[in-house]
Amino acid sequence: MQLTEEEVVEYCRQYLSSYKKTRKVIFADEIPRTPSGKVQKFKLREQFGAG
Image (cartoon, rainbow, N blue to C red; front, side, top):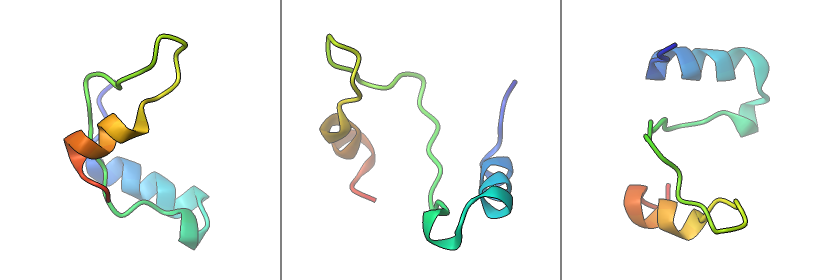
């Protein structure tokens, strides 16, 4: 199943509160993780910007 940016934004509009809605959608093939499986948020910020 492939989602489009518009589908993700529309889903968020329907099911999330206004302050939780996303302004930007980025699709990534892989998310950087630590050996214990936690997401390395600092690497995501380096790759995609702070927001």
